[in-house]
Length: 312
Image (cartoon, rainbow, N blue to C red; front, side, top):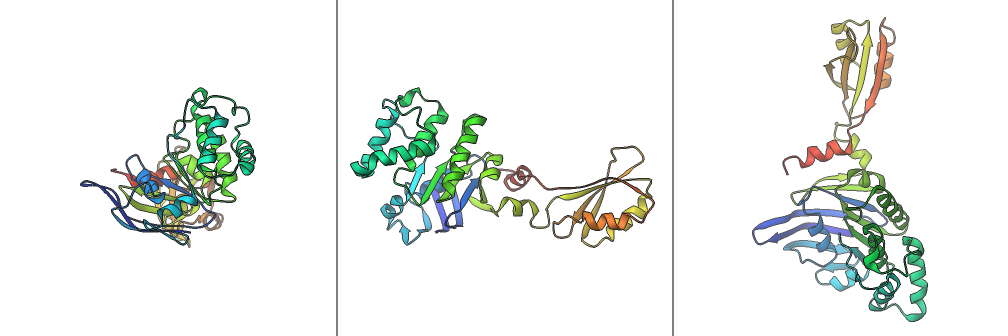
């Protein structure tokens, strides 16, 4: 649905986005992750037509940027990090004004406001002034603004930034519901948020894509899918190390400090990132040893993020 090729953006001599390429599929919830200054916001502003790229191409459905910028904007809803609200207006008046600006006819306008009120949980605040609202409620109003024309694509820049855990959970729930019908792209640096919400994660560092996959594949891929931890009691160190190293699917065995004095403990890495725990158990079972620990630990998304963005 969206195809980005070699996207580059310079601010004078500073390169904010450096040859970024990306494909986003229809109906996908895509999380754009990266440390502060990685180029996430600049990328989203180019995708939505607010910034002109220095070079590269953006194709959305049958439209191309910059020739069809207006056509792309018509099928996109965009919520910046700080929702652009008129604080001296009532929520209802503000959303009605947005509907008028967006060209929604009078006969459809009230019905659409009711739909958005229900979807974004605005029923209790429609009569309140925007400046009375908490940041979480303002984000909901901004989300309703972005959804006003029922766009096919929704772009959200740090939609949960500065919110408390309850507000984050509410925004996450709304995104999931919307994601059943729309393509959603949102940037964040909250890793748990991306893991809980996204179908796919793209990690950006210094304006470049350094990872692009599902959370599960990121954790298990490239032969670095975590490790199996094995603790043995009443075992011979040399024999145990040789036996485990010869198990099919085991690539590397690293001796570790045991939790219990006298025991042996190993960190075992599979050849393809898989868990060789079953094979290890079958190999150790005939021996006169006691297995006190046999667990598989995946790398966390936080660990992966730190590895890929270290030195930013």
